[in-house]
Image (cartoon, rainbow, N blue to C red; front, side, top):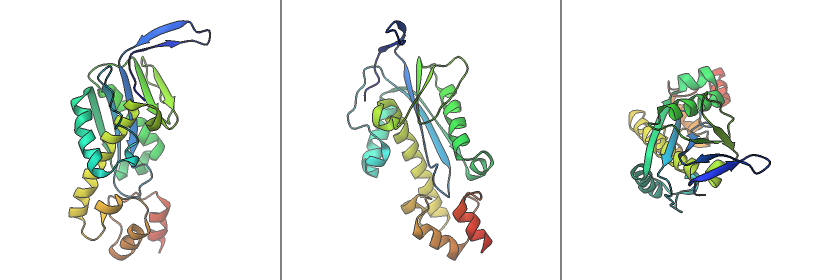
Length: 206
């Protein structure tokens, strides 16, 4: 799980280059029908290892908040980008996530030797990138990015809960729950809803 200093090798086990600065990138909110997609990239301090850092979905909200601060205190650089529903509708969720990973990696104050990407093939000129399936289970850096993005997005949805009374955004965080759909039927579609998502399209047709 720890992404520490290492060497990369080719198929013949010949050393190619040394990796010290490793970044992890992940997104949150891709499957929601309301609210933004939030993408984070982070470079943890070399040799920093925190066994509590894992996939954000496996942690309680309280633990995520605590670990969020620990990650910020123990990273060399991090970047978080927010893409609202309008952008998600325009680009689609996949392309929005890729855009966010590229932009947050470019915003890091130090260029990583290797960029670990959760589940997406991302190409950035003059950067070495590596797609990792279920990366938030396998890489501490990706898991840390997942936590940063999750906490940041949850706080946005909690603000929406105050702004848009009755939708219960603090509870379902904009995902397609039965309660969320019921409240949209009752109260109406908002600008923060993703107009291209099937549940919203069906509600608009009615």
